[in-house]
Image (cartoon, one colour):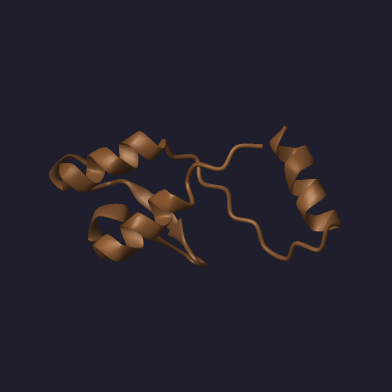
Length: 70
């Protein structure tokens, strides 16, 4: 299903797609208990970063774009 979604995205003029495989609840738990999630990495606009080292604003943006289902 994901491949069909990506193909459709590009046929409709999409230029960039970024697929992260993290559960939204894991990201919420890592905000509350960062000491337990030091190794959790996420993709951030062209680079990879440790989620718990990002600003709260950026963490919220990443969580906000996590739950998109096709």
